[in-house]
Image 1 (tube, helix red, strand yellow):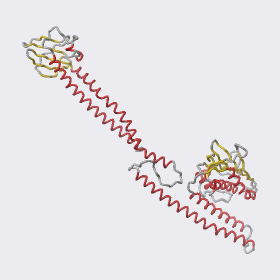
Image 2 (tube, rainbow, N blue to C red):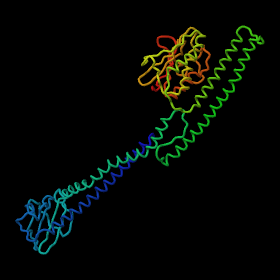
Image 3 (cartoon, rainbow, N blue to C red):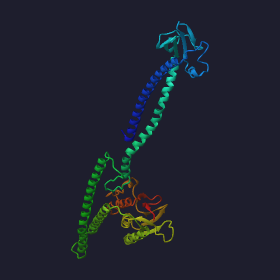
Image 4 (cartoon, rainbow, N blue to C red):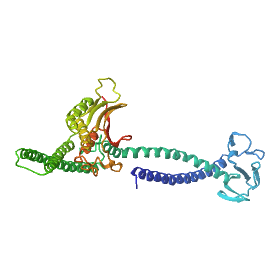
Length: 444
């Protein structure tokens, strides 16, 4: 069974069709039996209604009020007097033998007749009718009794479709409620309107699972945040002690040993900072978006990283693509701190992997009713086979020269998802380097 709806509709419609066939057969059979009894009564009524003064020259086929409609049913009438002499017989009627009083079915030639005989004072009346005529009339009468059933079947099918759709509507509502939820939302599920008793255990079990997942997720985020926070201060103190020991000469090393130690320490400090940022973003509740200037965020980010870029001889700049006005602020609905962290991580990531003397451009652009930006560098890029994994946490490209933690793009992707934007990483087409674009920010 792959669909409850199809299963319910299939069995309900099949049951309805089977019940309708049985009911139809019962109605048809009963109607035919009732019609046969009615025709027997008609024969008796005709025999009783024949006038006693009926002469031999008259015929029931003549137009006369006493026999109106009798010829339509092909009723044959024969009358014998008290001496047994045939004194009347319908025109063009086959000669039938006189039978005892009562009703019976006889066979004459290839036809069957239904015969009724009635003994009256001074005469004997016999009325007969072909069985084929009776069956034809009974069949038409029985079929007429079935038309309400044929009308009832489609009406009932429509009713079944409506009732099943209404009955399963809460399941559809639950599916839509879950589909429209944010991937990070662990709030309890609430359905609009009254909840059916059959779905209530499912919703309660789902809410219980969401609550347990929320507790576990919070515990994990708190652990990461606490661990990163506790590590940040000792690492900063260790770096200061290392620098002080080098300056006062108490620590001497050959070649580039101190430089390598300081480099490893800086990388560890950066990793702790990224872990703190990641923990904050994971714990960030759904906040309301406010209008803000993407241009201002871009200018601030480029300004903050200008010294770091200058130290490596990298040309870092901000470009505006198709602005509406020279002072276009590129207004968007976003969370200011989160959007700033997103752009900072992309710029920082580009600086780390772009070689000395390279170039990095932060380009703001519009696309219909949406606003976005792209960070383009001329570094080594990423092998196409590894592009699908660079957004994973702690994943670093093999043989990467820059000193990164593998969290920059993961944090940026996390923030972009919270803004319902799309982050795309691709290699430049006609030049070396990487392009990381964020599209779909709602324009204001």
